[in-house]
Image 1 (cartoon, rainbow, N blue to C red):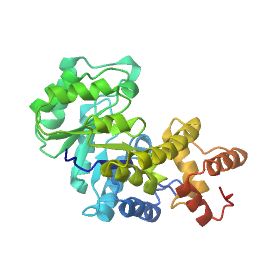
Image 2: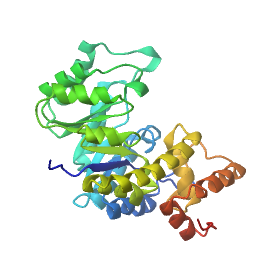
Image 3: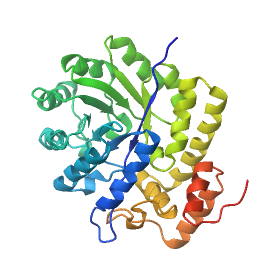
Image 4: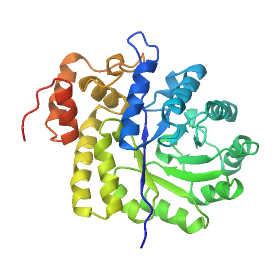
Length: 318
């Protein structure tokens, strides 16, 4: 069987200066990490990208910088922050398209104060977003985060009505969700799953994987997909074990993922790492950062050790 190469996308961080402003130079430097490892990007995500802390002009600026640095080199997508209003989501869509991103990802309506859309209202939401815009879209499904279920039958109905939808991105869904979607949608569609547990999903026909891990260990996740594409499962399992150890360790400092993400950025002295997260959120005190650093270096992940040495940290030989 001939298999298309699996794709990898990463949620990009938004680096800040110590005064809280976006550090545009650091962001441009950081984007080079994805280009070097051939990893596509999701700009302005609500979690890792801290999009909910950005004003509209800042969000559009993030889109524009991503396009300027990366378009034509890697895939450049906008991962819109969740909203409770079709109007606010539509404004984000227009900003992203105006900035030149290739594909726009939209979540379904955010459920605040237990307000959850019924199927008619949810279809109405997508009607308002997509009826007049023909730009390529990906539906971002995150039932756990949104606190209500967008089932495969509803996804099929939306995709059937709006063929500018080219993909479905699934967070924290069971494998049967992917299987049912593929059974229901009999035209070309891209399916993206989260990296943890993705080996079986890739075998079941997922197009690729996404997550935040590639922002810190981009070469490692690129190896993971390269070994998958080559059918080298012995080496793939070894690399996946590194990724899983990394995830199990850093998740203690989340959610949100942006906290551990920027802890890693600071410890490894990556571009923009000194700026931390945007207030009122904050990185842990120095003592805890030291404990985090010690544990991170004990994971034995070659790429982490390589970056640590570049940052002037002492790494024990394994």
